[in-house]
Image 1 (cartoon, one colour):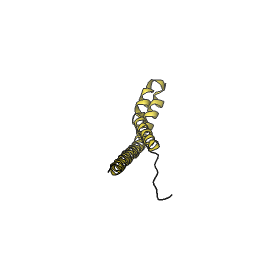
Image 2: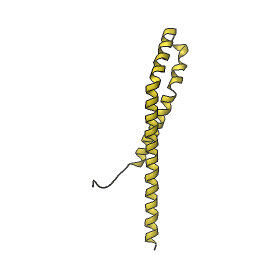
Image 3: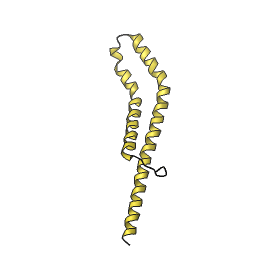
Image 4: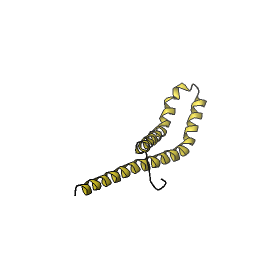
Length: 98
């Protein structure tokens, strides 16, 4: 029936958690590049990697912000739907006990 909303809340919550992880990993990616400084073997390679990382920062920040926004929306949706479901169930129980 097209007039009913059905949401897999566990999947939506999992999606939000995956987005949280993506945001955290992107946020710490510059530390990963820094951790390889001694392994690059060449100052030119090290400088090129840092140049790439500094220019990728702008795009990465946009992706981080988008992931964070979507994660918050997913978490809040699950919280709101579960709260509404509980409220409805409580009202039904109250109505049936009268």
